[in-house]
Length: 320
Image 1 (cartoon, rainbow, N blue to C red):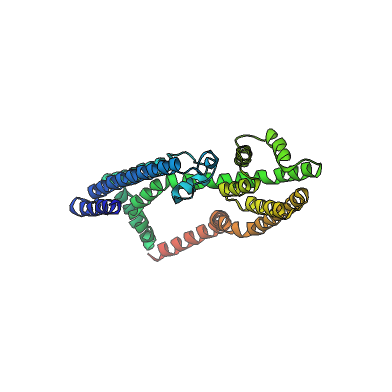
Image 2 (tube, one colour):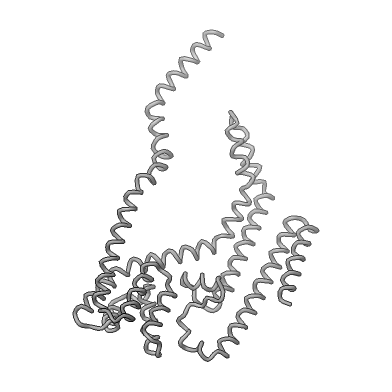
């Protein structure tokens, strides 16, 4: 029944876009799409509430776990947006940005901005401007795409910043953990000492505090570590958690494992820094070509070209 409902919405949107004018059809199709997305999100939320109520195992212990039953919720969860209404808010912002893009493209066409850009381009001699005329005609669609992708880009930037923060904080925390465990403290006690001096707003500290709360609620250490890796999905953290779980299962020393992981992480960061340094000359080629070479050509060949133009003008003028 739900599939038939969504299918009928798609059919109505297609018919509206064919019968009405293109812009009016796109507006009606956008409204129907937003209505279908909101209704689907509400139904999904209701089903989730029923599942959480009926499932005895999914109680307080599951509050810190990343839900993987919906890819959008999982994606937003990894980016740091973990509210229950995060998918609905994201879809609403995406729909609003899409509507703003459609309105901007329509305004550009109505105001004749495309024609204003095309006429000067067509007047460039040598046919050089013809190569940019298609870009000018695609200007409204480019603006529409950029505005509609703003929520997506914001979430991607949040995810990247979160990964960078975790990678930045992990080496120091791992070194401190290795030093404290070698001094005689247990892993949990050493982690508690480190978290007291860490900022509460940092992602890695927040996830380790969640790990501590789960242990206090009765979750086993292995399960808590697995849930920690699932909440972050950062490669360096996943390697650390895998090593800790393996040492816990085989009965190896936690201090030795942490020290080896700290040394391995330090070596990986050194190799990454060397790789970035080796890639720097290749990345500098494009700025050098676009920014420096034109200025060098103008400064070195400009006077010669000016004299050449004067000479040719004198010769042609004498011929006339």
